[in-house]
Amino acid sequence: MKRKLPFILLLLAVLGVLAFFTVAPVVAEWLFNGTRARGPYRASERARALHARLLVADMHADTLLWDRDLLARSERGHVDVPRLAEGGVALQFFTVVSHTPYFGNYESNPEGLDGVTALAVAERWPLRSVRSLRERALYQARKLNDAAARSGGRFVVIRTADDLARFVERRKGDPQLVAGLLGAEGAYPLEGDVNNVDALFDAGFRMMAPTHFYDNEWGGSAHGVNKIGLTEKGREMVRRMEARGMLVDLAHASAQTIDDVVAVATRPLVVSHTGVKGTCDNNRNLSDEQLRKIAAKGGVIGIGYWEAATCGTDARAVAKAIRHAADVVGVEHVALGSDFDGSVKEPFDTTGVVLVTDALLAEGFTEEEVAAIMGGNVFRLLAETLPR
Image 1 (cartoon, rainbow, N blue to C red):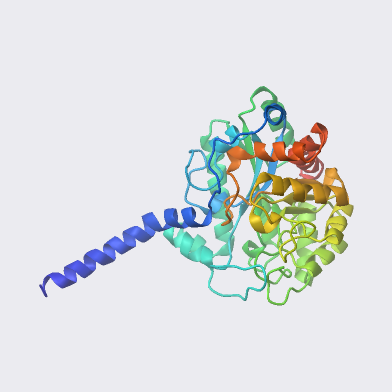
Image 2 (image 1 turned 90 degrees about the horizontal axis):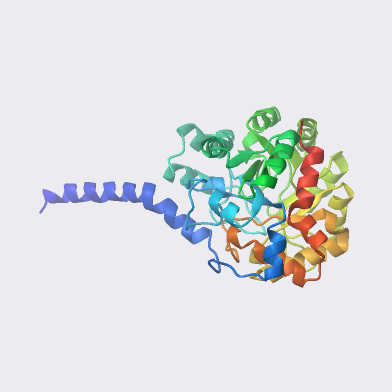
């Protein structure tokens, strides 16, 4: 028995390593990216007919973080290209996560162990991306571009206003076409160097937030320890982003950072995914005053679907948050920002976005207003702000 013991221990160690690299990523996603109800989803006939005519855009999904092929339909998570096509979603913003706590909270997160490191190792990312936040972002960008290259034209990545115009024209004849746009959740991939804005731009990034769950050298997070404002480096970052035609995303920003970015910015701002305090009062969501400041810059605010964003668990709660935002700043400044695949439990996956269309109609919005909220406002903003 003593002779067998080292072999058994070795075998257990090997099995443990294999489980870490094969089972752990799958289990993690099942745990973190839950769905309250599985499709097929039922909506009214009026909503289905209207939804089929819309250009739907969703400003936030963290799908690139997970070990799935975008072109293959999955039973896990919330988003892939086949499900986007089925759900009638024309444009999905794919936001890369490079640095985040293992178990973040909305109140205060000191710098500590990084949850993306373990996931990157388990999913066998390139070694340089395990060590470098910049390389993590570039690796996820390559995943998106690779999916587009393998799609036979069914999925395209939008980099310019001309790309967007060509996509919209093509989609008139084929409503199954899907486009993606790259964003970064927090400016951590810059690794402290504002010149890396150019590197991210060249890789296709067209949106970036200064912060995520931590305060950093660029500014303060709503969930950071000190919740500082925009730093001098942060002001330089905003100027560099605007010069390249990148959108500044204020999701997760501290109140002072929002004020400081509004003061510095010369172009429209976005909040890719949020709730509003008017229907769900917590540290994650925007006040009416913040909504007005962002709208005054010509910005667009993406309303999320998860419970902490809406204080509800269905599409009607999403529509009520949208109604509040629209009443405060006007329909033209409101959009969708699901936070799909963002380690949150969602009411539905992307095949169920028609439920939001249905809920907006039930909330009393006109069909023209629904069209603007579901995507028209985002397409207009991108046509005006993307580089040519």
